Length: 255
Image (cartoon, rainbow, N blue to C red; front, side, top):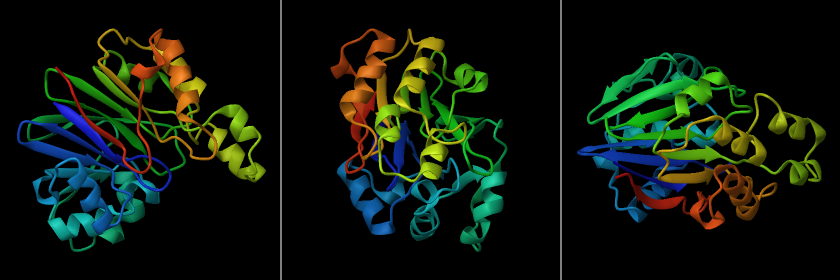
């Protein structure tokens, strides 16, 4: 089992997970041509994707999904709540599947375990993906960690974890007060110290990889994200990976 990102941030997100003959793309906030170019960088042809999973209806996650899935005839999975918001964009497509935020399902060699998160969307979820031997936790959009989030992510072998902003940088930014409140609120985005606190609350003894994701280009830095997570894990800062907007990150394997 391995995973790679084709980009992470407010301008678009996409994460590929692979096991055996199965490849799934979690979110696609990029246009059809851009997504294909980004996938090519990690050696993935669009027609080899088994499915696209959608976390929620915000454009940096679902914006490119309808056109990309239609062009390459890829099945799409999204919660019933998300489907109720963006369903018209998938009109006429045959393989669009709704699921409840607590319903596990299987796609080829991978089992997908969604879990609900507090975020300003209709029925947002994040995922744990497993091949039966290893578990990858993906958590890129939420305001605060909950007991459900902690329970879902404890004991994972790899984590892609939101570190959206640094609280001091956000407070001192030129963003309007209303936007600052939204980002820092319960249904906004996870800050560095919130991500670190989540790590401290779960079992990380199996962790082979951790990647900080969805970093704000204005209100965070890779150094600040790495420092917060490294303190929580008592590890070297250079062990913490970073998913960036332009290139995501290269393949990481679970052994």
